[in-house]
Image (cartoon, rainbow, N blue to C red; front, side):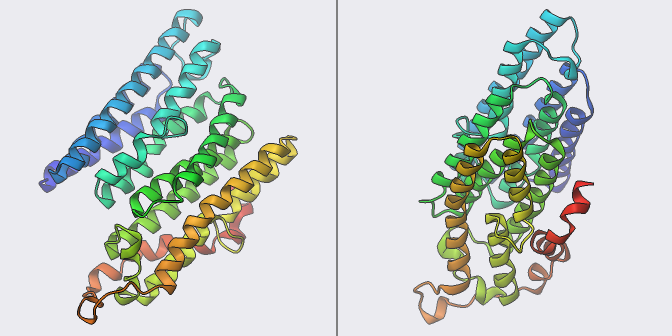
Length: 345
């Protein structure tokens, strides 16, 4: 794809998300979602191979179905209440439809089947856009309508997502599929706390965006598409190997790292709301996610793949390794736990 066209696509992608995030009228929000979907399709299918075309087709079908459901739920609401205001949705069937449509847009279980397949058919940089930027518009709609959405549906979606996000990632060998299931599990945590305390949801979303972007930037720099590829990271950059290990443990939610903060606060909030069985189940299923993060950390740091001497070393290009943004994001994703109280203020 030529740079001018790529720039137009990225700016359209940003415009669509911003229109959705700043609108209070359902038609404007829907238009923003459509612009957003149509802008990313050429980016996904730019590789010109059957896998990327299939991924773009799957993405288009699921997002179009979800957008149509959003439009249908808003029309039902407007028909019953006489207003198109996003914050005034008081009609129950349209709220249920909206919950399911936004779950489909985000890739929450049980509507998650498209996400691992689409990510596997995309390049690493496109996969990064899908699991970070593409989550902002639906999350902003959830934030705007949270007072009207049914908490029971959100809690069930959250629990299913953390369960399937953990289980699905266990037997994966492709890093993009692992990141897809990681995204499903993390979004499950956010949706669970959304109906209880929205500022924790926003903090979790910001930390998730930072951690995922940092890890994807490492995967892009080291060209790691499978677990076996990560065993060669040490030959590329020892510093990157160490940072990637801590980053994976942070994504798993281990205490000294930043990723522990949202899990801790969400479990505390669930316990305060007397949802103790829910908190226990979510903490248990997060161990499944922690397993595949730890496995990736183990292969990255402590494993040498069986290669001949000639193929062991990769070329070290200075410009790909000394990326200030990558280092800044990974530092935030690992060491920001002491600043948790400031994030919540």
